[in-house]
Length: 68
Image (cartoon, rainbow, N blue to C red; front, top):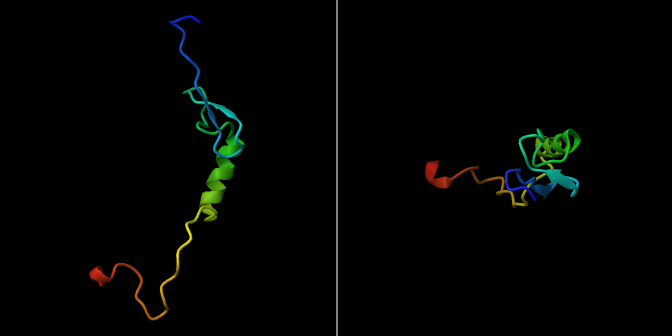
């Protein structure tokens, strides 16, 4: 291994689980491709990534009660 040559770091693509080059040469990092990046963005836009939470009762005001 040449010490002057930069080490290529690979990471796991958050979408497909494949190998992804984590370097400025990969415009889609940390994703492996434009397709994986677009699929992840689509999931966010359609609220596919959500935390489960209980909705407040209908008679309760939304938001922080201290600010009401």
